[in-house]
Structures are given as C-alpha cells and as structure tokens.
Length: 536
Picture 1 (cartoon, helix red, strand yellow):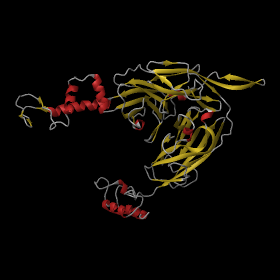
Picture 2: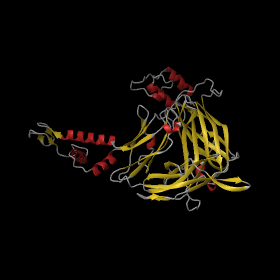
Picture 3: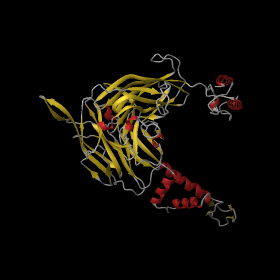
Picture 4: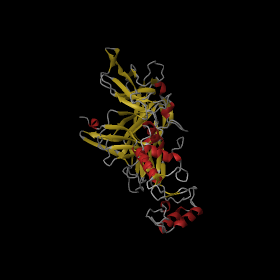
C-alpha cells in the first residue's frame, strides 16, 4: 500500500464550547450576585425581613446594565428560544473548529503546521488560521476564536496534510455545517469530466491520443480569489465538488502530465476568461468539462533567481540580514529575465537549529504584488509550502531543515504567462538562537544560512531547474541597546538602563530587554555590552 494513503482526517463542525461555558458562568454569577438572603441589607430598601431569598431590584447601582440580569434570568429559567441563544452566542463569544487526524501531524516549531485547511464563506475573524493548538497526542488541531455569521452554511475543507512519519492526505476531506436557522442541505455541487490529450505522430501523420487515466485535482476559487475547495479527479476521469455554499465560483483543473503539472481554467464558452459559475442552494450543475493538451516541455525556460534580504518593495539585492533572537526574518525571492512563466517549484534549505520556518506568501495587493499575479487576469494564483519528504522503499525521512514552496497560476494558459522580472514571493522565518560561529555545513562561518537549494521554472512549452540558485546570510544582530527605539544608542537609553541596573528576574524591576547577556539579571556585563553599542 502506498504510504501516502495512510493518513486520514475527520473534520468536525465548529462547537460553541467556550461560548456556552461563558454564558452559563455569566448567568450563575449574575444570579448569585442578585440574591438577597434573609437579613441581608439592600441599599435604599433596608434588610430583607421576608425570611426567604429575593432577587434584588434592577438599577445601575447593582448591575453594569439591566440586560445582564434580565438575560441571566431568562437563560436560567429557560425563557429564551434556541434562536435567541444562538444569536447571543455569536455576539458574545466565538467558536472552535476541530480536525482529528489518524496520525500525529508534522509541526515545525510553534509557527508552522503541515496542514492546509480552508473555511468558506470567509469567517469574520481575520487570520483565524494562525490561532491554533494541538492536542497532547498531536493528532487533533483546534482553531480558536473563530467568529462566524449567523444563519449561514459553511464548508470546512482539509485540502492537504502531512504527518510526522511522512504520510500524506491524498484526497481532500470536507465537512458542511450551518449556524442559526440555516439549512445544512442548502449547498450545491459542480461535476464534469477531464480529458488529457497529446498529439502523437503515427506513420508520418499526427493523431490525438487521449490518456486513459488522469491524475490531478479540480480547484474551486471564491470571488475574492481564495482557494476554498479541492477535489481529486475520480476513476473515469470525472470530478465532483460538492457541499458548496451559495456563491459564485471559478474552477481550475491541475493534472500531472508527462513532463510536469499543467493547469487551466474551466472555460466552457471558450472566451479565454474563466467561467463564473453561480451555485444556488440545492443546485447540481453538470457538464463543466475540460480538455487539456499535454505538450513536451523542453529545457528552454530562461530566467535567473536571487534572494533579497530587504522585504521592502523592489529588489535591493541585500545578501545579509542582521537579526536578534525571536526576530521575524523575511527573505524576498525575485526572478529576472523569465519568459512566459506560469509556475515555479523550489526547495529552500536553512539551519533548523537557529531558524524556524513560518510561511511563504505571494502577495496580490499592496505596493508590490507577486509576478505571477500580474499575468492572470483574475489574480488566481496558488502558493503552497510543504516540508520535504524523501522516500526510499519503506523508509520515509522528513527533512525538517528544508521546505518546498510552490507558486503557480491556476490558469496556466499561454495568454496569462508573464515575462520579465519581479517578486516571486516572501519567505518568513523566526530566528530561534544565537548563531553558531563554528564551521557551517557548507563551509561558511557566517552564523546561519538560507539556501535556495533548487528551483524549477515552468514556462509555456519549457522548464529549467537551477541548483544552488541563491544564498543569504543571517548574522547576529548584536545587543539590543536601543531601548527607546529611536534608531540610535544614546543618553536616553543610558538613563533607562540606569533605572533598572541591578534588577533580577522576578523582583518587579526586571525587564528582559535590558538583560543583554540573557542571564536573568541586569548587571555589569550588560553595562559593558551597552557601552560597546553607545553612540551607534
């Protein structure tokens, strides 16, 4: 059995666990504070002489607002209808989404987890995917504080995942759920067929050969250009993307051809523009078929690539980054002299003792957008990052000091291909330790190194692989003596340092930024380090 088939995922609809706990605690605490027991004095009313426990009257002297007490009483007495409770949950707290895997999921540090999970429609919480936790066994991922709209149908899709043992999730997994009074059945589907054809010369004449089996995926993109669903091409070369909430979609098909991956848009009317497919509740749309022509890719994809240590717009050709521990290090990857580029794949190698991989991003807005986004008319591009897995028979090795990054146009037809130069994307790391001045694996005592081990450029009809394409050095940023952040180490910094001199961790005066030698006290050695930076 292919080891890739061994990983499975079980997504669950988001649960209002924290929200429910919050409301129950609120009701209990408010009602407890509202009780007036026998003999207890009530401001403005005297003592309770009834012999029983009363609920004190409302008023701003008793409660922050009247609705808190009224809400608590209604909740405790069962007077609130389910719809009102649901609405209150959405207003006062957020939900949690859970996905359970069959194996421990691979993580790199605390900032990267090898899963790609999408939620559609887009949650109200921005960057919700960044707020995650793993269970102690590493098999369940929980996304916290996900705020959703009421009365909406949602689709949670696990697009890809990689376990610590190197097993991959082959087929995407989905779960459909609803909030409020929305009907979970109000979703639609899109189906079609995929054909992969190649011109073949037989007896001095050219015929069209159609592949018996097509390996690939169909990708659904929402109106904002976000990939929100994927589905594998099935036996018989058909596909179905189901569980789609009401919305407009564009579909793209990516297949494994003889010389590499190919992707194009679903364009039934053949106007060279991706079809916008409107999915209504309960709709089953059929006949969205795609024909992809497989062509031989020759080794003639021109272009060069390089790193820039300055992530600001335009290539500054900076070859070294000075960074402190816990700093975020961003490296820009640029291309130059490319022709008819449609995608690239690269392997980045780094010192995992000193750097932790965080993210790879291809921006589509801002001062500088990714080069591939300038060609596709809808800016439909895809960026993916995956740890490198090496397989030799039954042996599987996850290279935790390497990351594989992909950048592609979802519609890789010739009219969208780009030429020239520009930003491929931004690669982010966290610096985790003091650089080792011992000899590096590649013979450079520079602290840490980021190496573009290889990159393959795909153009229309060609491809080229470049090895050891670029490097960048990460060196020690030196003491953090600019305490007030004005860009220089001066007298004001000295005054701030003097105020905490002699402090030790835990004594109330200690602040970590003044502990330049990181020994948990601010002493003479810190003063020496500060003096060395004074005036710089």
